[in-house]
Length: 368
Ligand SMILES: [Zn+2]
Ligand SMILES: [Zn+2]
Image (tube, rainbow, N blue to C red; front, side):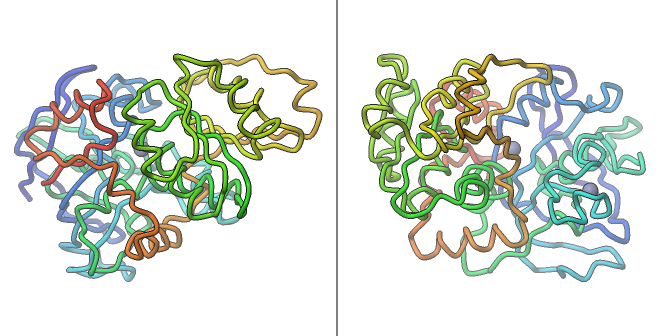
């Protein structure tokens, strides 16, 4: 089947929209007509070849892992969805390892094989341009395209009365930030939280903290516009970390430190601040992505005194259960995450990326 996809031909290269040939779905696969796709930081990391995708299967490649669309066709054994269903695409997993069996699918032991393999887990590729193989199956979707091939496992069926184009970022960034607060930290009413870095993930955490009833929600960033947006989203306090020491300021605001902190930047110095700011029994969630091998110095004595540091992937969410909950909150006006979206036509993908990298927009979403 002929499709249109944004291909990166070489490391750090521009996205180039090309006509490609996409394979028909296998028995357990779902063909999705993509309506919109969010751009996530991880797509840009993939373009730089900093992800553990085998280098021989990384380029040329099609990325994109926040797709939303309509099911076009399903494989013979697929029962979860049918043509015409609206779906949000999330992360894939194997479903059979010990993590998956325990319900912790985001921590799948075969995660790389199912998300960062450049091909299906069995090694077969799904995209071609003439005789040239193009690598795909990124997060089992490669949704920077008008049609994408997903697995039954990573399609989340969603209600049809909500505008589909808005829902794309739920599959990664929004699920990650909101899930951290709701599922992983389980922040309860009246608690306090400091969110370091209010990009799309941190901004989703702020919105979720409002949903949970946190009464002190502190947004920390160095971009004034983002802090303003965080305030609109319900942050009770904002701190510009380029102007004041956030640790001191947060301790003052909270009378000794917040119950929870979240590191959403992927920076060792910021992580240190997010841990240092905690009071006894405080919990710091780590969401920021760093290259493997990145080290940080922490005060062991501080941690021994009842503090917790917790790494959180994908908001500890089971997408099939969690994404419909977020959509319900959104439709009730209680989770207005669409306020962080800027839409771009698919053809303007390079401009969208540039605007995101320069901090002009929070969450660019491509309309196919
Ligand atoms: Zn697994
Ligand atoms: Zn992502």
